[in-house]
Length: 471
Image (cartoon, rainbow, N blue to C red; front, side, top):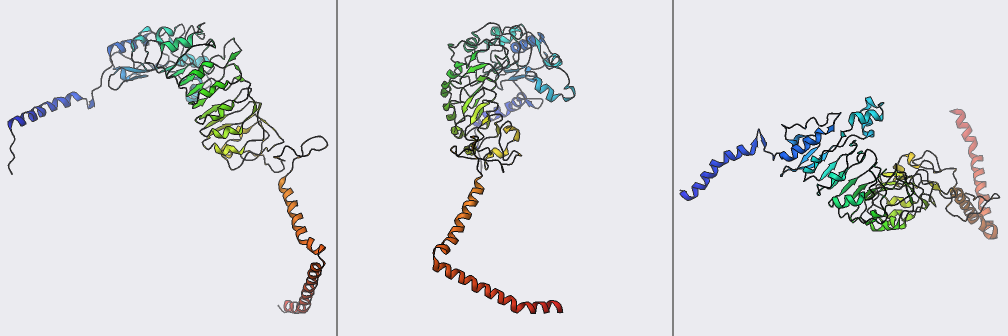
């Protein structure tokens, strides 16, 4: 079969073949696809930033002018545009430092800061990173840098971590009581904000903020070093539109946990531990079926832990420890078996009424936790080594009392044995005592049975003796 191809059809095919090798050559560079290079403006900005920093651990050694900044430590660029979108200058925390360098674990905190902290000042060239969405300056010492002068420029910033980053004249961030409004106005797209271990001034109660995207906020140890010791729960948290994980641990918040937390139904984590809250757990909180982490430890919470805690079926991590007036009024409820996702639990040093059951409910995942999670309570049973046998328990608060007024604790196993014996005895002997005909027939049967047994042994005993003698 003869195939005919016109000249008009052949020309485009020839042009395509001729252009293909140059295309391949341009698309590959030493065996790799060509990359969009870092812009000279952003590269120069980063080099100026490095120039003003002291880097004792030499982390920024890769920041050299003849290298593309995509290869630099702590830099992430956009895959198609090449713009710098992430700047991570985070240093190791003190705990990470100890865990990583075991051979120098005896070094003190001053050695740690001297060897690992970036220090110096933040160069205003950071303003030229217009497309930055992730900025992490945590665990460093930028003493003297005033953060509002540069942090608001990349308005697309979604992640900001200034935890333990000594800015605003060292440890003190100054007297800017409007710091929250400044961040709110400057960074409208912010999703994650980390300001742990900063000495921030307390926010006024009637602050007007409108974080439309903020979902994760870490304010732990924020007011720990503050001279103000009467602080209330930050009510502005309850006005966030999409909060997922607010960490408010280890501050000096006092008073009740506010009921307006009921608006935060999207919460996945809630950590107000290490404060001085002195109310009961709000009933609305038990309705947070999406909550995965709840840490209320080391507070002054009071009242009873409701059995409605069984509704929090998404819980993975639950910590109620060291609330000495918080009680399970009738012992640890068996409803804990509904918390089937629970992986971390701490119930140490709570108030348990000893007149109720002190046994850890069996058949639940509670047996899988460490005994240390139940320390400071008069509990027994697995996973504790203390056996519950001999430990009286009762489920009825109306038990009679002894002469001292103490509740008498029964062991219901022995009570049931006694009741069974009494019922069995009288159901057998009773008819024989109160019905003479039944008694006559029964005892006559026993007499005949005894006679037969005696006669059997009297006849056969001599034969058994003879057989034993012969053998």
